Each structure stands twice: as structure tokens, then as C-alpha cells.
Length: 240
Image 1 (tube, helix red, strand yellow):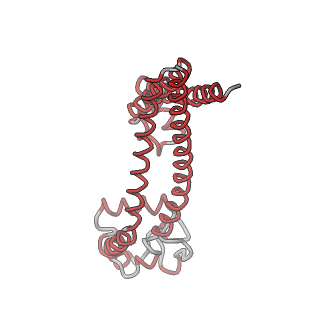
Image 2 (image 1 turned 90 degrees about the horizontal axis):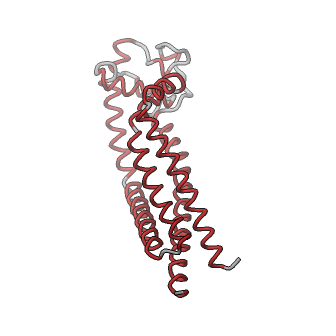
Image 3 (image 1 turned 180 degrees about the horizontal axis):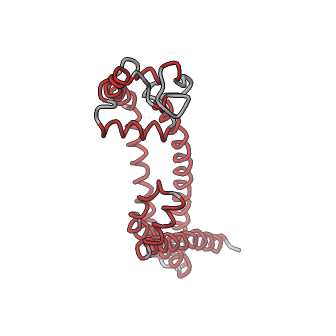
């Protein structure tokens, strides 16, 4: 097999997978919109916390349609040796790659001021836990949901509630800080339970590595796709 034939085959396979993936995502989006009743019933039984997914049908259809279009252009352009389609494919992938680079730069710029943001967040969190927790229903509900989902207590730890308005009124700590599942006095607190800041930082660190790895892999695939499409474009030009 010649180098040109190998590149055509690689281009066809790569975009064929993209085409099938787009078709799958589009199908899921259409199913969600047309049969949302069944979808809601399944989610309600299997994962009620994911009920908001019923609203992503249009997003799935948009993403699926885009993948279908790009995959078709890549496959058809490689199979028919169409310079026009290969060039359009190259431009689209290049735009996506530039957008990802810009997004990465924005994240790096944000991380540079993350410490300043955390300092302001500490002041806000300490104030709300000391003065407002247990008094303002909306804010209390936000903190309760956060502590429940992250399995944490307070912002730093249980001491954030010491001498707080909540403790002075009830003489107890919130149940999320206790060894048992009910509110407790200080001697019943789970002093090993970390604060929400620590759990949130661990969560971001773990997910950040996954997102970074996936983004790196996608970037490599995009560079490979651009290189192959541009090589085919140039080879077709010389063969003519």
C-alpha cells in the first residue's frame, strides 16, 4: 500500500468513526425529545439526580449534526479526493484547535488569580457560616446540599460553626459534621471530616487531570487529522 493510499484509508477510518459517533449522539438527542416521557421515567428510577438531562436533547442534536457533517466531509473528501472538501475539513478542525488553545490560555490566566479568588471565598464562607447559616433558608439549603454531596463539614472543618449563630441557638452542630446522622454537640462531631474547600480542591484536581488528558488526546487527534487532510490536499494537487 502506498503512502497516499494509507493516508486516504486513515482519513476515511477516522472520519467514519466521527460520523458514527455523530449519528449516535443525534439519535440520542432525537429520542430524548420525541420520547421524553419514557426517558424521564428511566432517569427517575435509575438516577433521579440527573433529571436535568432531559433538557439536553437539542444540544445532543446540534453536536451530533455537527459531527455528522464534519465526518461526512472528511470521508467523502478522502474517498473522492475532493480538494474542496478536504480544505473545508482542514479549516473546521483548525478553528476547533484554535478555540481549544484559547480556552486553555483562559484557564491558565484564571488559575493565576485563583488564590485571590479563594481568599475572597474564605471571607464570604466564614461570614455566612458564622452569621447566616440556619437563618437564611436559601443559603442554608446551598450549604446543606454542598456538605451532603461532598461529604464535608463547613468550609475549613467543623470549627467554622463554633460560636456561630446556629450553634448559639441550637447548642448543636449540623448533622453533616457529626458522627451520627443527627445534629450533635461538640463531643459528637466527626473531627476527621474535612472541610468543603479541601474536598472541592481534591475534586478539581482529580477531574482536572482527566479533562487535561482528554483535551490533550483530542488535540493530538486534531493535529493528526489536519496533517493528513493537508497532505492529501497537496498530493491530489501534484497528481493532477
